[in-house]
Image 1 (tube, protein in one colour):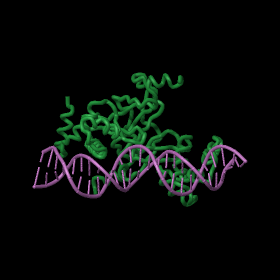
Image 2 (cartoon, chains in turn orange, brown, purple, blue):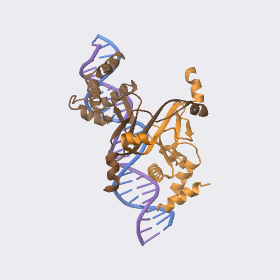
Image 3 (spheres, chains in turn yellow, cyan, blue, red):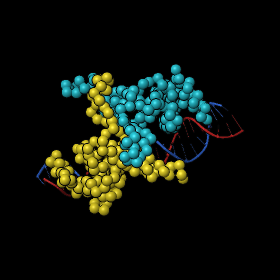
Image 4 (cartoon, chains in turn red, cyan, yellow, orange):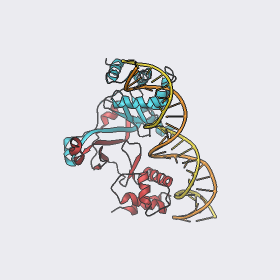
Length: 143
Length: 143
DNA sequence: ATAGGTGCAAAACCTTTGCATCCGT
DNA sequence: ACGGATGCAAAGGTTTTGCACCTAT
């Protein structure tokens, strides 16, 4: 597997230092499948790195996301979320319970005709789908 | 055309008052094809309604968007933007000059198999594409 | 040793809210 | 006249920044 080691090597290889704080942040994301806000990362990191400051969490989450070592997601609720998976992918977000389902394939069809028609070079996109997971869909009408 | 009149009637018909401020805000959006932040709406409205407060702009943009009388867009830069077009549609956003191109068709293919596979009811989605418009693409390498 | 990283506190930024007053119906 | 709407100011929440000190290399 190309796990944490790969991340750490890449980080160090880019001229960035491998600090205790960065290890803790990477570990917090790597050991959960969830999509954490900076605040949540900060909370989880308290256990292994109690003095780690929230500003440092922000600085590092942004750095790691810019380096594409982690992923940054926007569920439209006004705060950024971060996840271990760095590759391009999308999510189904439950509006009721907040559950997140990862999509393995990208449902966006950006063909060349679109680019030609609008004379626009698409370099990336962001897509998130909203709705209700099975559990929440069932009790939507109920209670 | 079902223009401003329609909007005003819908608003009044929903039990909401048709104030000078709301007229000005609707007019500001209707007379531009752009996607304005609350701050930008506030600026443009100064001409016709100098005392209109920014808080009122926020209250009304949110109300109008909730009533689906205007559209709310998120380009991922941390602030909401609003536009006259209320129907579901998407954009190409130029990362260099900020130009926005409206897409007439939705390039997202959310078929039923996806819902079935993940046992998820998709009620909406948000999608924006990023890249470079023709002008910016040309001078990207150059200067 | 040195450049980069961190902690702390303060500020920036966008947005919302409480309350007294005002205005559309 | 009534209830919703507004203006003002203050606060809320997230994220960034300045600076002195610290630390990985």
